[in-house]
Length: 317
Length: 306
Image (tube, rainbow over all chains, first blue to last red; front, side):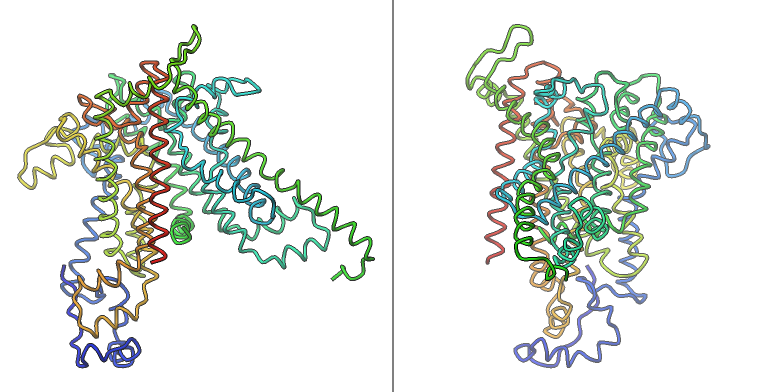
């Protein structure tokens, strides 16, 4: 690593306290960018600058460029899988048409219904729970919070086999949810992460606002809908984006909740396309592009709230 | 405000009514969430624990077998291999993703607009569905010399490797994909930690003439320690229950070389119809996950106190 050389120091190191260094460091203030980053990257052209551009290009090549491969493969006429490059050889939409004939749009619709319905249910359920946890005091509050946290530690993977039995015969009511979108949507309803995130956010709303509204005779539901919710719009944005990406990423749940392959979501259906011997990898890639688009759109539109959400989750613990 | 105008006895009655309502109300708000969590999380968990003690026979009725399922699962050599693969994959992936995430974070730290755009692009693997990532990497690992990774290796003068078809390389290939998927997520968390570093410390360090390495070790790393703690917890739990990545990329093959705990349990339960054995395997995984979470939290809390 070649970082810019550090300033020559005149004072002896024992003498330099933080304040002293700030005072004597005044001349260096002309280049404030210098201490902005851990590695002390330099903004001006130089060795460190060139190195940084090179490394950034490498990072882009490793983490972002492969996505261009999917796109170019999906648009290539001869998608033999081996002849992949960043630019399509001769662009065509044939692969998308073939993927359409294999029912990719039906799978896509399944996915959209599940993602839309699942997200709506999840937000409603988690907002209600968070409101109770943040704005009310009741017996067993800590226990309930722990229960919601436990739902995060009980991922579908670990309870897959008994969950598939439960989906086939829901206790007490005895309905068979397999082959319906409810089989995927309902298990996604209570998501501990969203409950925690929204609870933390709602706790920060000053109680004066709530008390004032209460004295004006505002009931609980109106309080939630007209007072609390508008105030936690940022947190709702975060819960929405992360929830959408989490639901779109589901694989095992749609797989075990399906009765037959027509119930699959687009992400699960990719494996059907792949194992179909008559289908080339160009068609699989066309399917991958279709499966990729919604989460990509959501991410690009709302990436700011996503990144702040992840950061907030990390710092709050 | 208006409270002063209400007569004392009316106020007391009102308070009483509100209190009574307030005792029930939270539970009404909690009901949907608790009900869904109960039916689709806790009942399956209980059922899984229950079934793990039975030989599940669809039409003949279940037969109590005690701990037989557990001993069978724990002594099955394919499960033992799967434990090894899960550990190698989980530990390698977690550490790799933290190192790569840290490198990305210090590389892309900064306010410039171009850096923000690069960060947005680098974050793409995280928002992409795992199944799509699996398809992408299958093509990148294409075994002939014109596959993407192999052509890059050819550029360095190395021969083509059939990454996913070779039992010696398949697990490492899966791990590389896992690191690729998670590292940008870690990057964002570590970046948030880096943003909290006191800049005057860097300046003071510069005055002291410390080396870059010392600066990273004594200023940057302690500052992002809480962030690393979070990342580690998430990674450890994620590593244990790894399923989709392996299932879509290799399906556990070739020759079981990438079989992990969950893919094995899935095969046992859904392909071989051994519900009891699969449940026992899931219960073991659940217990280990909970234990791990508790341990990591304990050490993190102790670390915070110190």
